[in-house]
Image 1 (tube, rainbow, N blue to C red):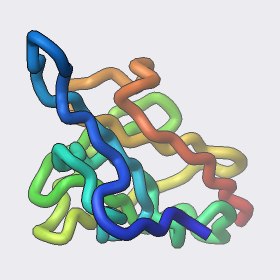
Image 2: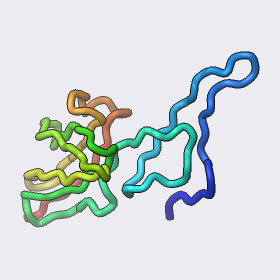
Image 3: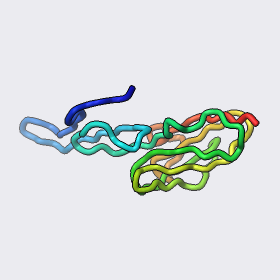
Length: 132
């Protein structure tokens, strides 16, 4: 599963003809630390809950791994309530510690601490069930 490529496989070099235009943007959301391929220009790393994030837990206090850009602060929301910001390390990883309520919980990360969770393009959410 996943994407495999040899060389530059995603490009956004800008316009052609009489006006070169500017380089475009590429966004790749991945649950691994490495960005696949060699896109041109370099992509902006999006946020993603790691593939190892739990979906069903038996304890209210739960650690959930988040992947993003290196050394960057992200907003965290649990059931719509803002939590402590998450700061990734040099590899782009951080463990988010939350206390869940019994039943289904919606855990979201936003591209910046000040971005509202209601901005769909700037947030990534998962549901975690707490069944004591």
